[in-house]
Structure formats: C-alpha cells, structure tokens
Length: 127
Image (tube, helix red, strand yellow):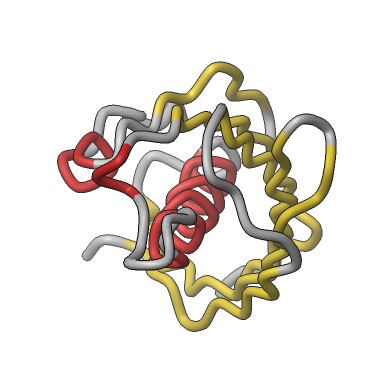
C-alpha cells in the first residue's frame, strides 16, 4: 500500500518524507525556534513524533489495502542534543507477522546518531 505522508500533526513540526520504499522511510525536520525546549535544544517530542510517524509510514508500505496499523509501544533513547540544522529519521521494518510488526528508527544530525527508537505496532484488518 502507498502511504499518505501528509499527516496533519506531523506537518506542525515540518516533517517531510524524502524517501519511502518497501519497509523503509526517511523523514527530515529542519530545526526552528518553535521546536526547542526551554534549554534551547530540540524537544524530545519532536524526535518521538519523527520516529512514530516514520514507523507508521514504513509499515504501511507492507500492508494490504484492507489493513491498518496502530502503535502499541515505542521506546526511544535520546543520545545527543541538537540546537540547529536538519534532523533525519531513517526507519526500517524489521519483522512483520500477521498481527504485530516491529520497527527500528535511527535519528541523526550531521551524520551523528542523536536517538534510536524501536516500536511495536498492531496490524488491524478493517471489517
């Protein structure tokens, strides 16, 4: 299935998908002042949104027309802070079963890893 990469909430942070392929997505966000926390670095929820949305997009490329997905859980480790520039989130589908899928995201800034995330998603069939 071809996923719809224009999603309202993601657009609030400027998330743009530059590459979507079978079981894969690459999304980018250009840092703005509005995306920073009180300490002047990217807010963790921006990175979480990038990973969650990237995982959903990557999974949708492998779903049938009558299937949907929903996040069960995401774990994210924040490794470095970012104050400016572009953040890239690359996501890969690691395992897809009949009802559960597992994905991993790597978030980078200037080729340095700033966060890693894993996610489990439920695969639902529309009735």
